[in-house]
Amino acid sequence: MNDHNYFSWGRLKRASAPQVIKPNNYEDLLKNLKKHRKLGKVLPIGLMRSYGDSCLIKEGLLLDMTEFKKINSFDEQSGLINVQAGISLDELLKFIVPKGWFIPTSPGTKYVTIGGAIANDIHGKNHHKFGSFCNSVKKIKVLSTEGKLQLLEDPDDEMFKATCGGLGLTGLILEAEIELAEIKSSYLNVETIKFNNLKEFFEIEKQSIENYEFTVSWIDLTNESKYFGRGLFQRANWADDKDLTPHSSFKIPIPFGVGFNLVSKKLMKLFNFLYFSKNLKKKTKEKTHYGTFFYPLDVLRGWNKLYGKNGFSQYQFVLPEENSKTGLDEILEVLKNDKFMPRLCVLKTFGKIPSLGHLSFPLKGTTLAMDFPVNIKKNKNLYSKLDEIVIKNGGRIYPAKDSFMNSKTFQSSYKNFHKFKKFKDTHISSDFWERVS
Ligand SMILES: Cc1cc2nc3c(=O)[nH]c(=O)nc-3n(C[C@H](O)[C@H](O)[C@H](O)COP(=O)(O)OP(=O)(O)OC[C@H]3O[C@@H](n4cnc5c(N)ncnc54)[C@H](O)[C@@H]3O)c2cc1C
Image (cartoon, rainbow, N blue to C red; front, side, top):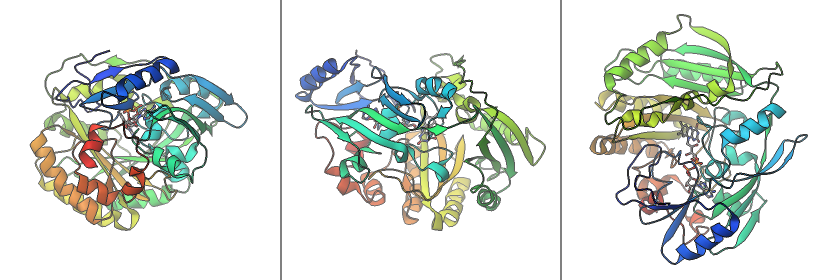
């Protein structure tokens, strides 16, 4: 298959179109690997929900792994499941939820594969209870481009640590065994609390961390506004009503080919104002299906096209706990005085469970994710100022979202970069890796 418009989620168009193949069985995969190894680099991919260029390669072959989606085994008593890595969370949840199980860590979309979840060691709203995705992964089967199969079972093994959060660069993830989380309902009891500034956010966070499995906040960073820094804090626990209905597949399509940015500054200011004000009360409670709670944007098919033909970029960083408050104050000060306004912003605290991967993103502290339309000059200008603050405060930027970080920023913030490099498969690369390594 040749696709001349292959995009990552931020819809960053590549200068030269890559070749893409989608093997549908193991023999086909081996045959293609052998053929293409001689021609150049390859990169395994899932559903391309990474925003930046970690799932792209300009001069090489993209190996689409989504045909590998079998459930190999499932123990309903212990919740241990063994799956092929191309299965999506969407497909997996439809199978496990009616049986009373859920994925241990969920991102903000169900359209990611298990391979992608491992390769970015993704985090969810319950990081303070479960850590990141690979903390629940018991086994990983990896195939090198030379055809060598490895079963990784020991989380202390260096290859295991390199593969978790290893951006697909250590080999093709074929299968994984995951410890699922037990649920008694597909609904969550969700409380939403208004906060007016970061100080209030940290106070509510402190009160919530013990008794709530899930916490996340939307924050309004509309500059030139008196409401800058206010937001909605959400905290939730699973309900207990035995209703195990899985999510629906209903979607509203976004017309293809919107050529201009619909997420304009003016519109976002209005949206943020209305969103904050939709509830008059300081605190509200509701029972919400997991489909709505975890995946609110999935209902809009192709919402990433709303930013128009230039696409959009997400800047997500984490700051260690000891510097979270001062560092965030500094970042907000820069954003307030910059004309380039972030659109959708999400704030979240990570807990103390250490991530396994040499290149895993999460660390104990606070993370902020901000969506910006793409305007290369403005993105570069603002991000370089933010990078400086993040690095100075001992933080780092999330590769799954990134398209701009330079090698100095990456290597100085990911301290195990050199340990990781020893396990990189020489025939695999990505545009992200070419930029930062
Ligand atoms: C709306 C939205 C919300 C999101 N929310 C979150 C969130 O809350 N938390 C979070 O952590 N992330 C979040 N993400 C990011 C997303 O979870 C990650 O980018 C994830 O890795 C995407 O998985 P994918 O299957 O699409 O993989 P791709 O984007 O296709 O690839 C991602 C990486 O995985 C590698 N890879 C994929 N499959 C394999 C394989 N079989 N073998 C080896 N390597 C492989 C690729 O080489 C690449 O480096 C969000 C993304 C979106 C679009």
